[in-house]
Amino acid sequence: MIATVRSVNTGPLAPVEGLRRPSGIRKHPVERIEVRDPGPKRGGLGSGVVGDAIYSRKHHGGATQAVYAVAREELDWWGRELGRDLADGMFGENLTTSGIDVDAAEVGELWRVGLTLLEVCGPRVPCATFAKHMAEPRWVRRFSDRGRTGAYLAVREAGVLERDDPIEVVHRPAHGLTVPMFFRAWMGDRELAEVFVSARVLAEAEHEWLASRL
Image 1 (cartoon, one colour):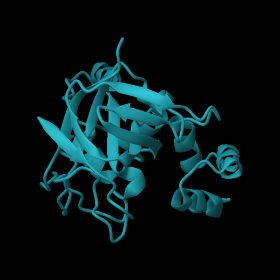
Image 2: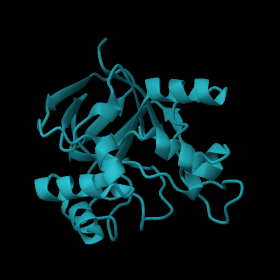
Image 3: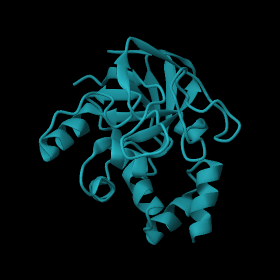
Image 4: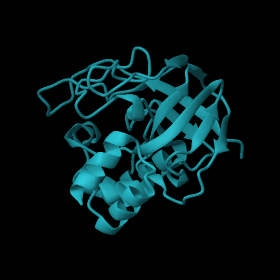
């Protein structure tokens, strides 16, 4: 199967039931999106997707969380598990992919997507906003136990992304350190955290945070 972009998704700030603050987590498919490097998390442009809303820039956005990708196959797995249809964009992702195992990607992997170049940086860590949005019991725990979070991407070469754009893995570091492994390290697996810190494969901010946990 050829790996492609199934859907590109954005969303404005909107209320989420059970939260006092608005959120941009409600994404919906659009014709195309423009992606660029948004700069640092604090003081930068926020999302790497032009026009996409981020409320809390303390925890979201910035260069290493510029674009969020989730595999359609993973949404389908959860749809069967939850007994409900999950639309493209339901997890708040900017890219819903098809034919590529997003959660098998290694940290530092490069994807040529259409005319853009994106770098796999790390996992999505579930939060209260995600839980309220999904409205499923024990959602954070269930999503974490599954451990297939999709991947945050950095924008190395900016451009426009559209539905059906091909996705080509043009570089794989071959260190074997995948996004789910990074997620487990982030969530408290000390042995894996030591591996990531020793390998120095993470961006500076993530490397320093993980090192501080040790």
